Amino acid sequence: MHSGLSEGYLSNCIPNTDFYRNNNLSLLYLEFTWNELETYTAWRKLGLSKATIPQINKASAIFWNSTQAEISKFTVEALRRLFITKYQCEYATGKLLIFTKAFLKYLTKIRLDTRYQGFEIFLHKPEALKKNEKM
Image (cartoon, rainbow, N blue to C red; front, side, top):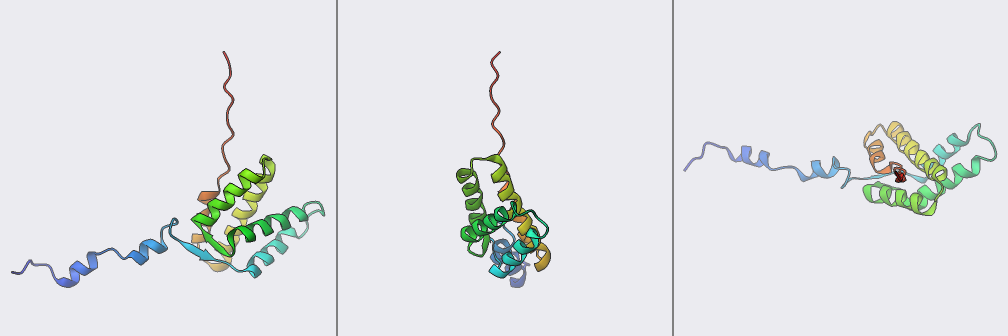
């Protein structure tokens, strides 16, 4: 019995799991090198005051130690949790998140791969809690 559909047509209808794995941020793993982070960190420090340079070095070290050269939903969310729980100061948390977002943007440009910048979605600063005002 002939159904009118070719076998090739049916095989083309089956989703390609590689496509979804590479285009879903929840499943995507991207890499970077120590040299890329080191180069970016040195570039960021140019022209900064001596007081600011240790902050950039610290942000770079935390980023490397937390991600171990892997950008994924898991590593980026873990990094965000670390920033929020370890650094209670909103200013410090903001600086660390800004460094991370800027490095992802840098990787997007030097590697010509926009997927790096997509991970910014997992780096939003927590909303400040509003205090209930008594009437």
